[in-house]
Image (cartoon, rainbow, N blue to C red; front, side):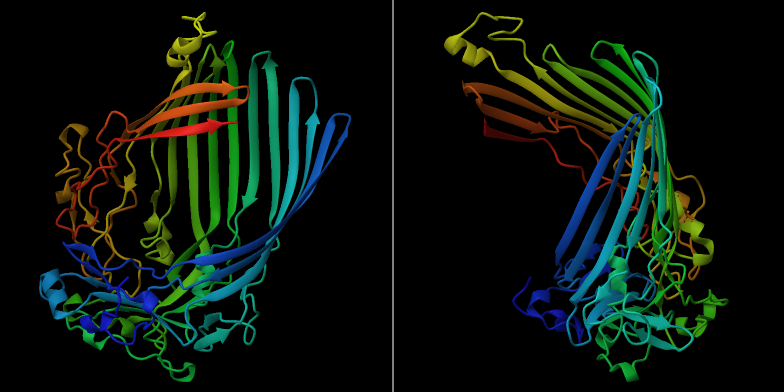
Length: 587
């Protein structure tokens, strides 16, 4: 933070005068990266949650019946989660050079939050209620069945001072909570029944087969709630995309002073719309696994796990501008919107989904003779709707444009191990040693975690405006695969940038989600412990810990922004080897 307000020095006006927000604006200049302050400052919240949990168990014959409740009364105090100085994006669409556009103060887009008078903070309360009934049935000595049913009810939060506002398309204005619409904005979703079913079958003495399936429900996310406080007249969320080829605004003409609610031009501020189909997220889970004791203290397990999530939250432009038919003579964005009395309308709905499938292998040597080892390998595929800005999909009528690998690491292996060295009193070697010699030679332990992981699925972005007046961003056009053989990958050329080109202005690029794979990871974290037994029940421990012990170079992901001079190249690596030593008293 700074000791004075510097936003006027950038030609900006009518932004936050609060000292807590004294910082430069955020500037994204194509080819030069991002400079300035973080987007969300100041930032913080105080949560006060009360939880009541009770469970009752009744055993009779083959049945073990459990029932219970989990009641949570939640209070959220947001202290000012906002972009008070604004973020500004400069491309090369006016002068042919992004830096020149910046020096002239002509942004491609501008985004800022401005207070309507009471500040940015807000306070909400709501309740989450869960009740369950479960019966574990021991059918035979070899078969156990688990059945259950859970009910979930999550209230939409209400704001203490009713500072929620929702856009009404029919009325052409905002509706206020507690006045035009209910305080909670949306009715509670009361149809959330989650059945559970599990099976354990031991066909042989050392083999167990397990299977299970369940339906689960999520809850509302805080950003969904904040949307409806970040509406005029409480907070003015200004998102503006400049016209092309003639700019409509500059840094010097941003931002007009906030108007009273009865004089607001809704074409210049963001309003929020709650879709009638808004419900709680639903997750379907299923598993099937076989565990076998290969040798005494050596277990092997193979399992399949899958899940599918539906009714996930997402945002979209509920007042989307149509694509300009004549890009040579572009028309203003607002003139192409279906509702002319309002600009960007951020719609909140439940149309996103995801799915996950994985094969898991697990080998465990239980602690014996001073050694324990656990190795886990996962081969998986994770697919989901991933909006450009984590919220807004490009086209609500073709949501699959945002569907692809998300947080997807195809191969992931982790091995952990603990080994008590077999030296010293009572050990295999030098077991009769005592006194000072045993204190030096005995009590040593080696521990480690070794990880191997394939590269992440990466999505590409483009500086070319979609010219739709929304925050969905854009992607380049893909004209070839783009992925290089492993033998051809270098830090300067991780993927083939010639396989991508700028889309036509006003059109969405055809590059999909997660089409490029980033670098993998290989890492060893090791530690050496020396235990000094002081007396019964007390041990003094010396610890030497090494992270990335062999100093392996694990590359960061390449630049995926095709407006960046570093597009397709890697400019850094993850943390090099770190070591630390410590002392610990165990009692």
